[in-house]
Every structure is written in structure tokens, then in C-alpha cells.
Length: 276
Image 1: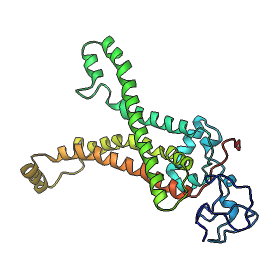
Image 2: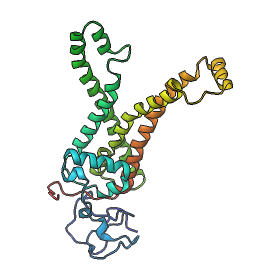
Image 3: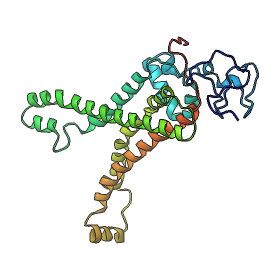
Image 4: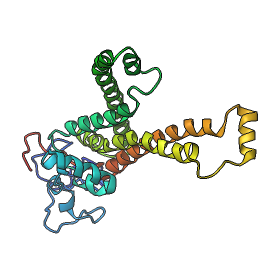
């Protein structure tokens, strides 16, 4: 077997950069110089044509970055991530904007329900001193909170990017820097799901605490009070938001994993590529 990036005998003399050298996307075999007309990978039998960079037609956002494409891309990532990642085009075409819009939407969703509600919230304190001061406070506090959340999620996305590059290198995958970044940008649909999890937690709290459909066993209630000094309501109020955030992070991580698996040997397109 030829290691990733190693030329096959008789391959064309004009070599591409290592990131642009076409490899079989199943096994990493160097397919540079092989015809895409019905030829199969000598190592695993996958059709060569399906591993060429031109076979990746691009996600809806890459094809035309519109609001509709944003919706289609994010919904496609959540419904069928592997299929969407197999379409991912390895070109420089503004996937960073997809990440930004996803982080912006996620931050707005996270901030909005709690603004002016929590006791320590500056907006609530501002409104307690008058409507004018409350509005003035909200005009700088809310954007600051949104910006802070964007910064935190962007940092986590960057850490994820570095992590998948490290893991890919340890496993012998040619996951290019561009491929890893594009995967993380498209997987950011998971941050929107994470932002929606607190709402799901509120529903759970409503069902279990506010309008309980069933009562906790008396023995459990007594044990919680005796050992931990808390009630079942306290547990629900703390556990449901925490569980929601864990689920949201898991979805983001799962999307990244599927993206890395689908793009671990994908070849970059030249920077001047204008394929659309």
C-alpha cells in the first residue's frame, strides 16, 4: 500500500501540493494520474471519480450563500450529516460566514429568554430604576452578552479545529487544514441546537415541577433531603439545564466526527478555483 501523499509508479511528473494531491477518500491511496473513467482504486476498489475534488459539488451555502441556503445547509447537517459532508467542496468560499451567522443565531437564542429576568441581570436592575434607563442599559448589555457568547463558542470551535487536526495526524489521515476548518464551520449547526436546549429544559421543568404529571417516590424525596439537603425540585432545576447543554455539545461533537470521517482524505481545490 502506498502511504498517503506518496506517488504511484508512472504518475504524471507535474505534482500538486500535498494538500491538493487526490487520494482515495476511503483508504488514502494516491490516485493522482489515474483516470476517472470507470477506474477503481487499486487498494480498496472505490471508484476513482468519486474521490476527485470535482466530485464534491458543494453544500447549499457554498453554492449560493443566501438565507435559504443557510437553512438548507443547517437542516441538512442535522438530518443527514454524512451526505452533506460528502458534498463539502474544499475551496475558499466564505464558510467562515456560515460559522459567524450560526454563532450569532445561537448567541441570540441563548441571551434573549434571560434578559431582564434573572435577579442579577443588569437590564433588570436598569428597568427597576426606570424605563429609559432600562432601555439604555439593554442597548449595551445585550450586544455585549451576545458578543461574549460568540467569542466563547468561536474559541471552542477553534479548539475543536486544533483537536481534529491533531487526532487526524495521529491516525495517519490527510485531513488538510482547510478541510478541518470547513468541517468545523458546517458542524456549527450544532451550536444552534445547543442554544435551544435550555428551552427543552424549561419544558421538562414545567412537566416535572410546575405541572407534574407524576410524583416522585416518597423514599427518594426523603433520601435527597436527608443525605443532600435538597428537594426533587432542586435536582430537576439544576439537572435539566446541565443535561441540555451536554446534549447540545454532544451533537456538535458528533457532527464534527462525521465530517472528519467524510473528509479525512479529501483534497483541497486550488485557491483560484471558481467552480460553482
